[in-house]
Length: 334
Image 1 (cartoon, helix red, strand yellow):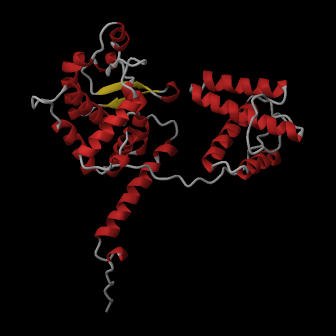
Image 2 (spheres, one colour; image 1 turned 120 degrees about the horizontal axis):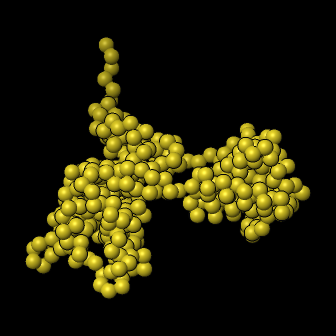
Image 3 (cartoon, one colour; image 1 turned 90 degrees about the horizontal axis):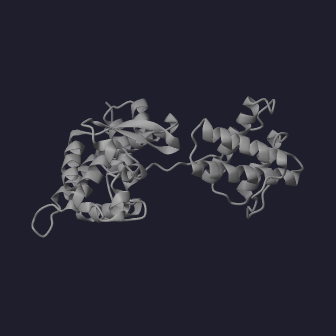
């Protein structure tokens, strides 16, 4: 199997492949709750594999381990990024695992095929001190009457909720107003793949929420736009009816400047990373963090242990008197 440098496959090589791919995608949608974006990506990857099989004269139900390896080699030769190769390999593993479980194949040709090695970069985060400085900068902002504006009160809540709950920005901006009506310290979130979870709201975040709800009406668009926006915690006159992710990015960049933080280091996802990393550093267990973040696989959550270890290593190297980076001479034993 192989692929040309420019992938153009849009159709499977045979009706048999088409039926198998669609059966697999139906299962991923119905049983696994895969998102539309995930389904689209899997469809592209599997159509590409089917087209590669056609050039080798094989169908997916008879493809061998050698065919899979040649396909991966062709992807690599086409200068495809390792991360993209790994995603395609994941699609193949799930697909052939499905065929095996359904009795369509008696083997899994992906068995023993190594996934392209990824040097996954550690996520960017802020220190606890920087995060608190960010929140203080938001709270300190005032309008022309030396009083907080409605926009300032909203920004305080956005920062508090991102850091206190580890929400994805897509989850935050689309929060229904109804999800905050109960006097509970948890929010019910429907995240990626339709997975539901409870996320905590700390005392400061609750205070910020109560302050925001008192002025929320000032931010409501009027007329028909208001009808569409009424259901959201963060209403907006935009097409979606709620504050956009892009606008949140802009607000945080502006806030970073006021807090004396490089704006390139700050985004909504950086606050999600800070939430998880600071919990790890505080001794929280990974399973709890996985649940709060809504990760399907704990392997995704484990990256934060590496972040915490990396930060600890840098602290030792910069502060310990015997650190090589300090240029100290180790005392001789007598």
